[in-house]
Amino acid sequence: MTNWQTWAAPAVVIFTVAVMIWRAKRKRKSSACDEDCGCGKDEE
Image 1 (tube, rainbow, N blue to C red):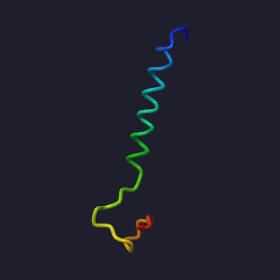
Image 2 (cartoon, rainbow, N blue to C red; image 1 turned 90 degrees about the horizontal axis):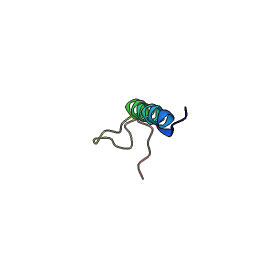
Image 3 (spheres, rainbow, N blue to C red; image 1 turned 180 degrees about the horizontal axis):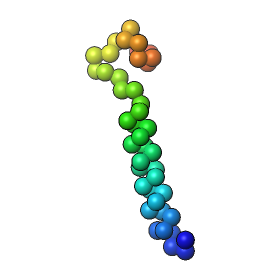
Image 4 (spheres, rainbow, N blue to C red; image 1 turned 90 degrees about the vertical axis):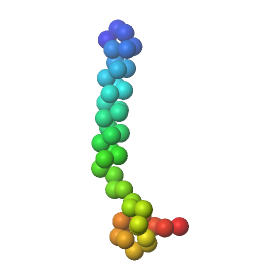
């Protein structure tokens, strides 16, 4: 790995995939959600 691009490109790909997986697994709050919906998020 003599060139910075050799490690930078896979690092960007791994980071991007990790963010996509994290966002897909995160619970999304419905626009119709209220305080008693049970999603675990407090309305303030």
